[in-house]
Image 1 (cartoon, one colour):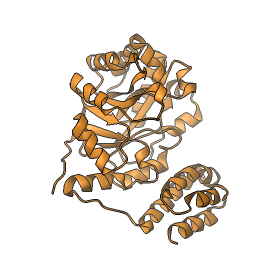
Image 2 (image 1 turned 45 degrees about the horizontal axis):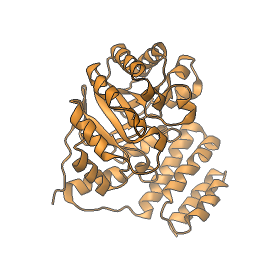
Image 3 (image 1 turned 90 degrees about the horizontal axis):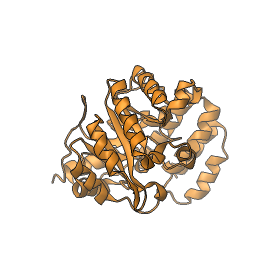
Length: 326
């Protein structure tokens, strides 16, 4: 029995057939992570969020974030900032690298971002936010989208005025996270707000928040009417989630992946990270990913401690294999 049929998502000239999209996650969405998701069918991925100011000053770490050489398109890139000139120049640079879409962030809740009047702080300043978006749309030929939260805090600085005006200035789609900035990632995402956004604009709306399995993906689409789903934490340790969702939508069946498949994917992920960043840095950055791959494993906290103290690649691979195949 077919449960639900997704419609292709069109953002400007970009078409995503099955719009389950991987969100940009700081410290997570690097080249190795993106490659693993693509290999598991995810049709559209983002690089990590990047600072417009840092790109202007040719910060090497930021330029590494948006290095997509050798990768399979389509790929989106996400900018944050508050200075219009810096944002425009950085957008042109991202376009030159091959970004298929540039997303502007008015959603990041991190204190170090907000204190600089960037990210979620722009919810407090709709005039500046819209002026940025209006200029950004004019600066590049690729589609500009907006990532935004429902507001800054309950009862103040609601996002709807920015969302409605964003459509008027040429933004091609809205990625809406159903939480206030002050909630960070706690509590439940407000899918009723996503539904309200969908009813308020004529451009595509992609819902974000609390989709971790095929059932929640189905419920979000049915409850909100949104045009696609942006998945963040749901992909951590489970790059198979896209396949799970599509299989469920097409057949109503739940598919599972064996520990052997999880092991092979984790080892591939590690190899890609080593290839991109070198053994020393890759081992340390992969520790969190390997911990997520072990989610649900008996005595997982014990094994995560072993992984976090292992600094040799050969030993680490043997440890992962021993854990997942015991």
